[in-house]
Picture 1 (tube, rainbow, N blue to C red):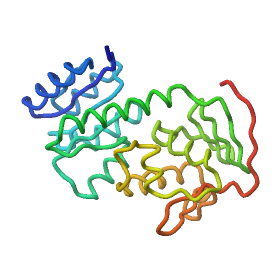
Picture 2 (picture 1 turned 120 degrees about the vertical axis):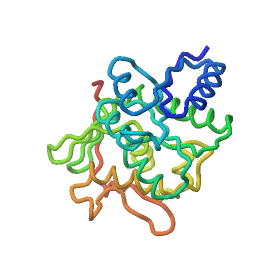
Picture 3 (picture 1 turned 90 degrees about the vertical axis):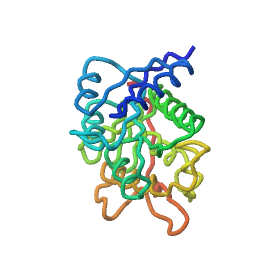
Picture 4 (picture 1 turned 60 degrees about the horizontal axis):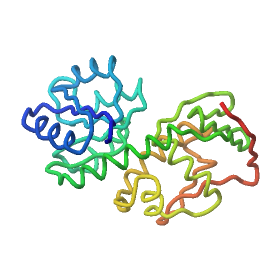
Length: 239
């Protein structure tokens, strides 16, 4: 039986009850909270594998709650929203969400997104023992860290997965849809805004000058390319 723990955060009691019943029937261990403040209290004392977080919360809204959770945890976060505007999706991803599901949603769709997010989190948790060096950029997959000119930054699981895909396909032009399907899952392909947000986040963390990227290059109308410029080196590391 699946023992993954999910926290449902939504101010609608009927939806919380429905999600608890549905997810429990699928084998998940489910807890719930009615607002962002309550959710933050719960995550301080309990460990979860995934959080389903509504955007339209009273008081501390979903974006603010997501940022607060992400500041202290790498837990998977899927945003639930009745809004389908591109700006809302971008803000959700920028706040640290791994993805989102638009209400009303199909249970099968929700289950697929949940399982995909849990698989990514599990794969990231396994770590990668290599430390890669690219002319001033050091990537430690095991510790989820990058070092740029002695400046150390920690990566979120999604940023780590995306960067790992880039470096394992270095110097190749990677189309948008292939990146999305490889990193987010086969149900994705058209959500180019996902890439734009996460590429911008990665550039802020790994590029000496994010405005003039040296590593993650945009291939207009095609996708992206991770450029090594012949400077890549690799060293073994177990920690």
